[in-house]
Length: 209
Ligand code: PRP
Ligand code: URA
Image 1 (tube, helix red, strand yellow):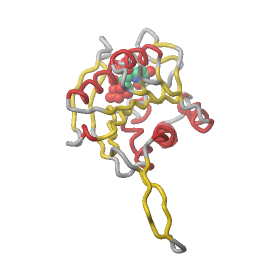
Image 2 (spheres, protein in one colour):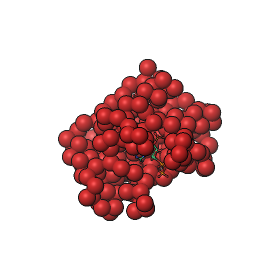
Image 3 (cartoon, rainbow, N blue to C red):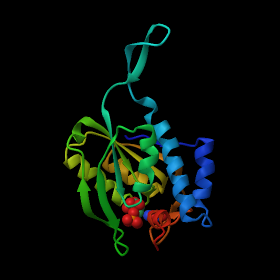
Image 4 (spheres, rainbow, N blue to C red):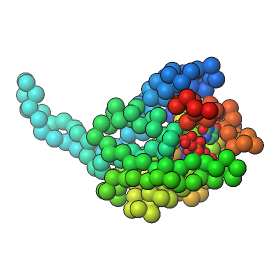
């Protein structure tokens, strides 16, 4: 079964409080999401394998470590996932980025895919699917199915805020996928919004309504 990690570092929790606050405007919201994404990336990559290499410092030769293993691919779910990509890339600048475009039909709450563009070697990469919101789980579930259909083998899911309903969907449909969250919230409301949540992530990031 996939693991669920709630990354409750004090800095993440502090910044998330201001992200949730309805009085936080678009500029500050975007900056905070970027910062939290970077902090989360630090935690998510904690288990990446390393290997020994020999280098010369100005003083002596020494054995030291560099990242080994699979290269990383980031896959934001459009639109709101875009708000977290730069934060992660600050720590993993060589990561390639694929995009999955999905929107949630407001009537049915079912995801509709409208765009997909991925690096050609996704089967060889450790992929991090990025979306601030895991609500019903429909969008992340579809995105992950889409990636697997195209050969992806190693996938992690990174979200700011999740509802238990969404987490259950991913655990059931994708038991091989570990989920990383900044917070696990209480529930979904009748409109499919996460409670207490942070509202509509895409609208708050991009200033739309
Ligand atoms: C939001 C969010 C997720 C999705 C989560 O996107 O960014 O992708 O809803 O909901 P779910 O778990 O119930 O599928 P939205 O559909 O609002 O599109 P947008 O990012 O383009 O605004
Ligand atoms: N999408 C959002 O942007 N917010 C929610 O609370 C649920 C889905």
